[in-house]
Amino acid sequence: MEESEKRKLVKEFKSSGINQSKYCKLKGLAQSSFIGWRKKYDVREEGNFIEVSLEEVIELEFPNGVKVKVSGLASESVYKKLRQSFC
Image (cartoon, rainbow, N blue to C red; front, side, top):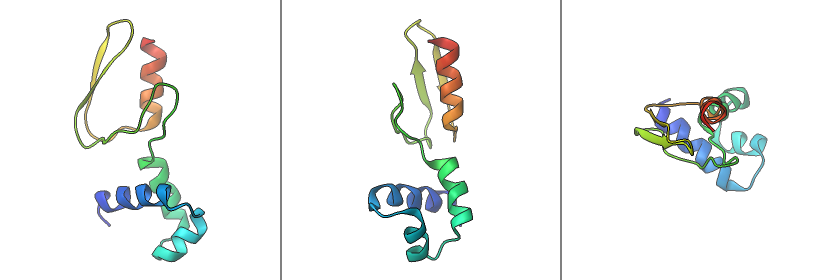
């Protein structure tokens, strides 16, 4: 399955309003695989973080003036580490 399709399914699940087990059954997905996709693609809003499309290059500017460019797919933990380092 293509990465873009996995991201689409994770996004669709978030807005579905049903639990993960039911969603996986409806879509014919192995729940163990879907859990891994959620960990990889589900970017949650937390603190000053917002959901963004990570298919593009984004630039983060921190209050101390440091700018960081991030390209490709980055996990939530990467952003947390950046925030801890520069805020």
